[in-house]
Image (cartoon, rainbow, N blue to C red; front, side, top):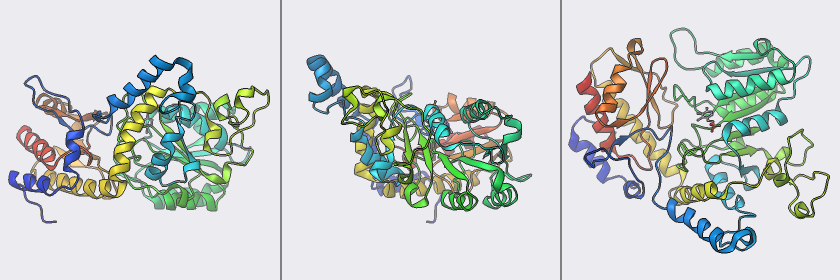
Length: 416
Ligand SMILES: *Cc1c(COP(=O)(O)O)cnc(C)c1O
């Protein structure tokens, strides 16, 4: 599309946007004067959809009226409640329904998956991860390595961009695998790097790993609900995600995991809990753990229903819209944003997000000068600053408009 920098152009794009009506289905934080903030931070915390309240109220009512009976007799019985999310989750990550389950939060799930998929031996004990991985992932992975009495500095291979580049090349990963493949136990990368917004070639990376007998998992915190995923067909071993970023399910809400079906009947090591036990005998309280032969077999506890209710509210919107339509608008929104940013004549900012991206654009600020970000905030833009020098901007296709992008550009241009 040929973009131009006029305000009318943005308005016209909004008028032709098939997903436009969804903007009305979300609450936007308001400024003191009652105007909406320009919210470009869905990569950090998604907005509340207006149907969330109703979904949570239903469970509060059933709890109020039924007490413990709600496990079986609530309108949406709590006993199988997590199952109500599986189909939507499976569509979003490209999996079979049996391969996904809503449970825990991301860091917890990463630990559980490491228990099953990081099985170091004397010879094969290394882990490949992003040099700038999200800190929680670094802590979790290091702690597992130490748990196996291995020194993390000898086990972790940190994948870096080349000098003067911002993104990781699959080629460089391949070289590491070619040279050290026999020593590597696990590759764990973000589907989308949280800092640069780079989308990894998950299919290619999984294949490269598997060819050398390496397990491959992804942290989809910034990928789920943002980009097209086909975890099953890509043969990914496992993946974990949270639901409060692009999936708009509220602060700290329950996340999810994907475990490829080839492991469901295996006797992979795992940490167990009663919710992962065979449903037919769970309440007979047997002493021997007999796992459900699906991803559900990795559950530990009975889950927080109020949180799952918020996720269901959000997923009902994703079911309606579908990832294809979201991805299509996302591409338009970000190319438009990039076009506008490139139009600004200033050496104070540069875009570090590559073409293979979701809806996040990371803007590197010269000398890590945070003042620019603070001024954006003062002017009503909600975005986020990541040390040492990046502003992350995420126009979310579900609820952001082209006019939001345009308004952000105008404010940034004026500050610069
Ligand atoms: C947001 C995020 C997390 C958050 O982990 P929680 O356990 O949900 O607090 C973890 N990893 C990445 C890459 C993230 O972006």
